[in-house]
Image (cartoon, rainbow, N blue to C red):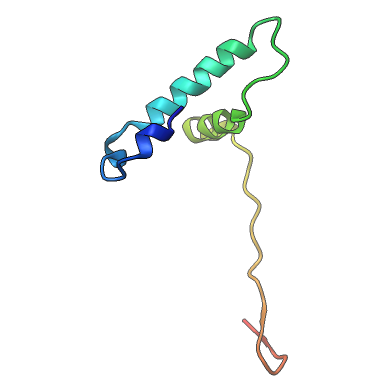
Length: 79
């Protein structure tokens, strides 16, 4: 669907990819809301990420990532 737009890589940065993605997701949500539908498009994670970006108060809290310890060649742990 969108692959022909990638033929000229010089102009791809000028396209409104956010609007295209959002329009695609809205269309799939509309299709998925029908009583005969059994699933929504597989890109529904994009909707969730968009919602978390726009409404950060409903986004899950990020867990702190512990600093990784690395080993040197002589087996001593480095900080």
